[in-house]
Length: 82
Image (cartoon, rainbow, N blue to C red; front, side):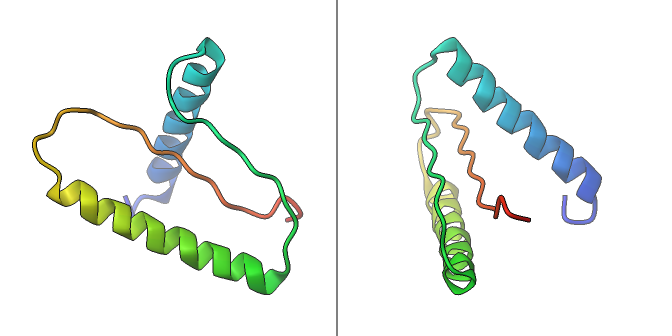
């Protein structure tokens, strides 16, 4: 998807909408949010932490066996002020 930014954005929107639909229906899952203010430097640190977490999670997924559940993980981190 890296070479197709429009398609990647469409897929991200689809999965975010899927999570929103499940949340609205009261489906089981972990749904959370946190709105906060931080310095520019700390936002950068949080973005790095987010990327590291994502890489670690993908490493666990790659080694997971047996494959018993199809799971959606959705996360967003962006400045609302931009």
